[in-house]
Image (cartoon, rainbow, N blue to C red; front, side):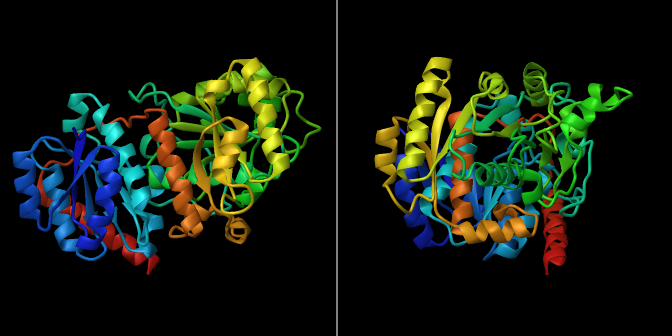
Length: 445
């Protein structure tokens, strides 16, 4: 028995390609061609919890359908195809309350299936009042974000607020560690791009923490020069920094991500007491949906303190023997530390070397996602101080990263707060969305 139905307003060949993966996941794919088709479907069936709309080929019809999804007592999220040049701006810098998401062509049916599955998991696990009464932000909000390389602080709550997420009624965020005891496997690349995908594509509030005080280069890869560090804040003579939250210390990147560096030099880390650091990161869950930690490859006191707090530990593995051996070692250490169940592989450069299935078998850990080789693309993005998600939104490897984000959301059963009232009047909603799209088009043209 299908769990939910998905209304799909895509060309016939795309609809047919999606039906198999959706059926495999337990979701019924229903074709709609007009806003009247959608309205009729929603009147007859109560199990349609998501829609896929084509804003690239027929934007006016998409606006009408979008209005149908949100009129009366409905608040059905949509996954909307948009032109590639607009996608980077449609993320709203992570400040939208909307549960809607966007994608561009070309795409794989499997990737769309995972995105829809993540959206449906959020809907199916949301309280009944949340599904019917909120989560549709008004797209007309100001969407300006800081330029790359420009430091900004006091980031982060819903729509740019610095208030506590717990105070605003949001669920506490999840702590994700990216770690492998071997260097050079893509930990920082995956950390940066996963953070960017969650922030820009999923509308989540993300804090990216560079916990590597020796060889860390998150800030430099994102074009952030000499950002304030946690060690700086805690060493301030007037002790003002000691009372600041990580949200206040973090630097805002152009993607909307909050970026926090532990220390500018490995020689000045005495103030970074492992327990105090771990407690501060746990407290940051009240301000962010996700706290992603890019870790140094060691088993020292700081890493062990952070391992204990992680909801999920992603282990990037490249398909080569030295890296696989390191992952096997970490699995054994994780068993001793009692964190084995939190481990998932991310097979990086998956289209070269040892097969992904052999990597999983040898390491003894299931892979959450596979990321293909795209070294030059990541280098080009880094040279511009951006993530690949931000700089090359239609690249195939970015699709891999987004699949990782979707599977992580699904694995942790994450729900997005949808308690804020949305726009109920169809005409008002359509005009607001139309105006927003026109502004975005003008910005990127």
